[in-house]
Image (cartoon, rainbow, N blue to C red; front, side):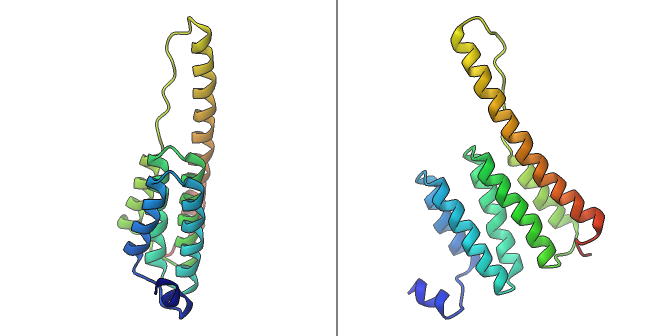
Length: 156
């Protein structure tokens, strides 16, 4: 039935889509969920249902980041900004708050304080790699949001 609705052009409510994909994430299938987020939001954008696409992308970015899937979360966060532009969504306090909420979900990386054993060096190396991934993903997202805001492509 769901496939028939989509095929005929009627998309399910965004909350239904969000719940379905969140289950995929909670099952540990992060890559599969990522593909679902991207394909479903593309359908909502094509149908010019931008607010629902934004709901799905925000939810997706946040849940992926909560599960420490920083690369996936950052990609969805950048798609969120792209969708703001495509949908000519107003730059208002609510939408700025949505950007802020995504930003706050980027995980904090803790560094080991004492490096006394060989295992500690391995933990430091892993933490540095995670920190680099976080910085790269988070800065890509924030740069995209700032670039849109400054270029006034984010409509008010």
